[in-house]
Structure formats: C-alpha cells, structure tokens
Amino acid sequence: MDAFQLLFLVAVVTSISEWKSVSDSGKSQCEIMNEESITVLEGESLFYVPFILEPNFNNKNVKWYKYSTQIQNISSDKKARVHYQGEALFLLNLNISDSGDYAAWEIKSSGQCFNHPVKIEVFNASYRGSKMLNYGEIKNSDQSKKVPCPERVQSTCSAFKGNITWYKDYTLIEDQHEVELRVHNATKDHEGLYTCICTWAYNNKVYSTSGSRELILLEKAVHYLEILTPADESQEQFADEGSEIKLNCSVLCGTNVKHDCNASWYINGIPFKNRDGYSQTTKIATEEPSKNTIATAILTIKKVSAKDFQQKFKCFGEGYYVTKNATLTLKRKESIIPLAIGGVCMLFVGVFVAVLVKYFAIDLALFFRPYFPLSSSNKDTSLYDAYVVYQTPMDKITEDTLSQFITQTLPSVLEDKCGYRLFIHGRDDIPGEDRLELVEKCMNQSRRLMVILTPDLGSGSMTTERWPASPQTSVMGGFDWQAT
Image 1 (cartoon, one colour):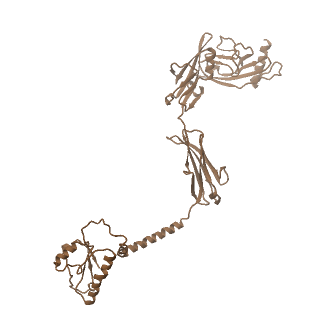
Image 2 (spheres, one colour):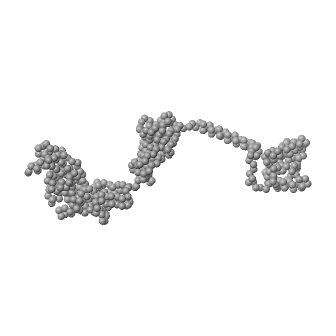
C-alpha cells in the first residue's frame, strides 16, 4: 500500500464518527461540504458530480466511498456497475441496495482536504409519479408556460450528448426534444406531470435518467382595491358610552389574489397596537364561487369612553399597488324619550282632529268652502244644489221667524258665503205655473232636498200640518234628504 492510499484510508476511518479527515501528519482538518440528497428510480442510471466540482474523469486527487456498516471503496473500473472516474460517480441500472451515503474525498496538492457527501435513495419503480421523486411544481397564472428539464437530467444529457424525450402523464409528447418544454395558451387540460427522459450512451451501452415536474395552472389574478366597510370615506357609527363595540374594516383586493391584501385600523393617524381595552383581529378569505379576496380587520373596544367619541378611526386598505382609507367616528345614541314624547303629542293631535271632524264636519265644510270650491268635474245636469221646503201654516211669531230664516239667514249663508244655489219654495216660484208640475220639475233639477222643520214638529203632539209642496213619492225617492 503506497503512502497516498494510506492517507485516504486514515481519513475515511476517522470520518465514520465525525465526518472529518485528518492528513498523515494529523495537523490538517478536512472540510465537510454541504450534503446533497438525490432520489432516483430503480432501473434507471445515475451520473453524479458534486455541484461545486467540474467533471474531470482524470482527476487522481478524488476517491469515492460508500458508508454502510463498514466503509466500502468504490471501484474505479469503468466496467463495474457502480464506479467512479475522477469527480464523477456512476451508478448504472440502479437497484434498491444502492441506497446509502456516499462521499467523494478530495485532497489537493496543497494538502487541503474536502469531503463531498451525498445521500442517494433508490425507490421501487412503482413509485413512478410520486411527489417524493418530483423536482417541484410549476405553479403560476402565466398564459405561456415553461417546463424545464431538471438540472441533474440536463447535466447528464449534456455530458454524454444524450437525447431528451418529453412525456405528459407518461404519454409521449411528439417532436419535443429540447431541455425546456413550452406550453402555449395553457388551460386546465395542460395540467399534469411532465417527465423528461434522457437516453445516453456510456461504454457502448444505453442508459436512461428521468426527472418530473408537476404543472399547475393558477387562475389569473385581478388586482383592484375597494373598501367595503365603512362604506363611505367619512362615516359615523352610533355607540353607547360604557358598552362594547366592534368596528369592521373590510377591504376587497381583487380576484384570485393570494398576497398583497391587508386591512388594518389607524387611530388618530397612528397604526393600531393592542392595548388594554382594545384589540384587533385580522383575516384574509377568498369567497366562492366569485374568488373575491377580502381582508378584514375587526377593532374591538371593550368599553366605549368619552375619549373614543373624539377620536378618528381610520380603516386602511393595502393592495398590490394602491392604498385606500375611510374614516369612522363614534357618535352617541340619542335618547328615545324626546321621540316618545313627540309620538304621544302627535297621537293627541290626531285624536283632537278626529273629534273636530266628527262633531263639526258641517261647520268645517261651510268654513272652508270659499277656499275650496266644488270641483268642476261634476258634470251632472242639476241646476240647483238644494230644493228647500218648509212647514206652513203656523202662528204669527213662528211664521215671522221662519220667514226671516228662509228669506234672509239661509240665503246669506248658503248662497252668499258658501256659493250654494238654492231653490226656495215660495221665493223662486213662477206665478201662474202649475204647482205640482213646478215642484216635480224643480226637484228633478236639484241635487238634494232640504226640509226645514219648525219647533212645533218636535213637540210630541199629533198634528196634521201639511207641506206647501208635496212631491210625489216617486220623485222624492231619488234625493239626498236633509232636515233642518
């Protein structure tokens, strides 16, 4: 065994427990590089070079080892299924037993020592398509997608001038042999598992190495900002002093927005921070099926104080490229007592008006008639508003009183003041005209019949006074009777 091999053996034995190497002088410490982890499928082949090294098959300063129950030397014979050449490790036609920890020990001419560890895990072929073997997801809302072949597969194809073939969900995609697959005008149908397989030749034999990525199409995000509550830029909210109140700040940030959507409260222009009696809770939710993204901040005031009615609470919304705010102030609730008193007063006024109308309807009608004349829309053919009849004969005093009422008082009120047109029997008769015919004619031309009763009629004595004009029953039947 030459001195160089002895040096490597000492370094490897020492690193079993500490992953450090020591030179034959025992003074130089070996630097351990970051460990890489690789997952591969049974039956495929692996060509691996530590990421900080360049492939150099003739580098004699590097040796590979496998760590298991004991340290195993990796062969440098190119015909071996598992071997190395310089920095490169070859595991051809992988099987499950190839899983384990490997390391490349590099000792430079300067005496510097480097340990390049790698953990290789070989999965059964039944795990094909498992997320454990995927090289990540391509997830965005771009209309055109790029699906790059994993770097490990690319480097293998580049080193051995291999040929790349693309598959979608293990179905061949024809005429696609570039290291980057382009998907134009992507839709949901383009989602799936994309696998690139590199077929490469080594020592006159053909091997394959594959890597997969999952393509996920996100719906396009539309950014805009709208403050939902408070609805106005400046709004008041009623509150009772001493009670608890919750102030809601809701901000609509757009559609399918995953980030850059925030809602918060400011008090007197200062961002809110939790303190005694005040607390703020925030959340972001996406509504279905609209996909609207809404951020909500709820400010809880445990006990409203007089100071709170003087403060300005500002709902602050922050979107992708814009901010908005709305101001909310608290206002004391007005007492219900004045409202109750006003309601009672209105009730009494209503009752009073109803009583006036019920008992003084005629007086009110006569009083307001000059200001509200009869509508001209009444198109009946009546010539008179009323046909007036009265009782005769009677004693002298009653007759004089009745005569004054009939000829002066009644016309002055109904005709002069109220605008009524009356036909008064005895005043408006045409001398010589047939009496019965006149009565029938004038009654037909009147809207109502007004009968004036004298006090004697209500005395209770049985009298047989007659009326000066007695219209036929058939004529009187169609009139509005009014006794006075």
